Image (cartoon, rainbow, N blue to C red; front, top):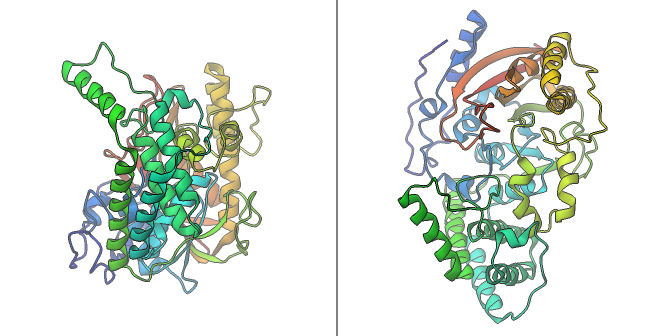
Length: 469
């Protein structure tokens, strides 16, 4: 169902930030909600058009580091700016914070973001994005790093998974000197800013294909056109002569400028508060980082859950995890096993359908006849997301909303209706579906095909569930 929604009028600057504080998307939300409640059909929308004050391209600190499956900022902005969704608590929860898109938009809207994520790199990136650093101090620290790195003639070796595949000896040693100088910075928050910048550098001067989120060694293939072959060869030649610290300085200066622009537009934004690493247990996460969330304490939850075995979340950030000391090569498999939406299971694990309704059991049975492992992965994802929904229902305040951005993927030719599955889960906990809208995915780097038989996800559904009256 199509519904033409016009954006509110407002004065926005070129960076899409200043002048937006006065905008309230509540009337847009109410128009969508009334239409959905009347017709009970998913509404096709274009968030880029509705949230036209956020322009394409660089967007404040949203772009300080690449990240797979990043949420469209316009979606987060739309719901964070709707005063009708915000209650007196003034807090927002994103239990799958990823790169911190929701957290940053909430922070800039004057809301306190609470976050959780199984990936420690995601938590660090979200902290850095939402921290209002002193720009002068960052500039001074960069000069300190420059002088220190130039003096070092040695540095501790950093264990990187398959390091020979990704780096020349010269570039890896240069990176080790730079990260040694970063670790000598005294202030933890400042150190993390430069570690995020370093992570961009570590990927940039590696042999990993820059066009692919998951690290894949770049090669020159016979099927390439002459121009494509020349382009890849030019990058290889550049890698032989690159000055690691010059590139690091460029990255740092760009990110310092992003911080300056964000400080100017939103000087009093809130840094995230961390709850842990498990969205299934916000009472006492596996790695407790803050006070547990009490029952009925959150009025607004906005999150984009992981897709079931459709995105290599841990592998995509493996270089960053290793370089930044967040997970050693030997720890990556364990980290993936703790993640929802993982791609691997123990061969000894059986296909368990406990807690999964009959209509999804039939589908899983069909998948198991084609590929038993894929059926196990999909069933595991459904069981774990059911636990997540139960936990989100627990912490949601009466009258509060859960906004979920989900996509439907295919497994062995079967369309997995994640949107309908989550809707069933929330409604089983007494929540009401207040809104369902659908937006096409266009060049977001959200999902790549697993193989020729598994197409990329073409659109996302945004569902809003309300607790109580």
